[in-house]
Length: 446
Length: 56
Image (cartoon, rainbow over all chains, first blue to last red; front, side, top):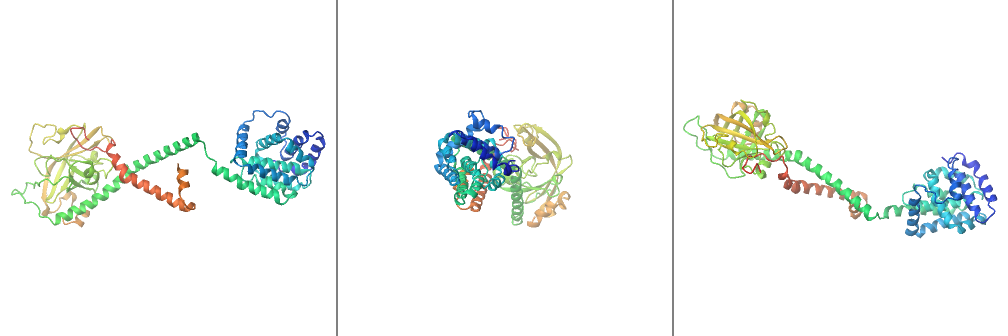
């Protein structure tokens, strides 16, 4: 804002200011005020003389802050003040003695002025390149008092951390250029270097430090929670699906090297194998309703680790084995960890569920579902919900959590054995052409 | 906290950046490999079984 009109007015103004300044105390004040006027636009004129004149205690908004910075700068490095002094002194070297006198006579006022200047004309510091040419144009002595003084003021103000822009020291350094080539330029660059250090090294107080650390911890906690959700909903699926494939491959390879159990005399009667050890895989589930490529390994036990989380579907240890009269009950995740029973609610009566073991293929047909409380173990009874009866059906019971992402209830799907094929006869029609069976049979000898 | 870590890391800024990324990767790995699996059983949506204790 100050640039356009400054060059013409500047030479005239300080002369009149000095001319008016007969008394020893007054001239600098007026001089500085006129220098301000020269620097600034007419809009700021009204405030500057008022500040310079009487009321130093006027409640300006950021004044306390500026004073605090000034004190901090003075306490932190006396070099700043010294540099400002030399810069101003070199600027004064060829100037009338009038200027040096007030500077020493009224250090308090000069400080005051140094504080007020950036505040009254904030853009001056922000636009040093525009101020600089104005001074450079006025090479006369008359301009130098204002310039040198402004340099001191700027240097002091620039010492305030982060208040003035990086260009501000260059601005004050510039005006000295016509007067003393070396000194002011050094002061300007030195100010720039000096200004950076307090910005970096200034320690924040204990309260701000605590608040900052607390904020960082909060952000960290939020990121960790997000990471947990990502891990739970996405990564566990990836891991479990990979484990599922590896385990299925391993299982079919093992089957190829094992002798199947003896077939019963009645060809319609399925083989009932002996239960395997806990946490050991012994079967593969195919549910075409869940997808053409759906298969999950079946392991003994219903512990989260390792069975349900990493081995797919788990068999309740005391329930029946596949093909056995009674209730063959299995549990599986409905969400996360590969979610083997994610679509359990999509099963429709008549859907086939094929369980492959070393001995052959057990095809169960879905009948109905139920939603129960988590402690309703009677659904695992040979006759579900009728624990007192023994039953004569071969039942499959799937259990999963309900609703999704909740442990409030359990979703139960009942199926009944409808077909049995020994391993030698090949897979049933339901899965014969499916991608899942293709994939499983390719790697193994089933 | 992060400022302190950044200051402790040695070398120029790109070395610091690489070290910081390694640190982040290590933290993520530890969380996903050990911490989260330990916490997961306490999450409400991981119970699929029917038991006498209410599905634990």
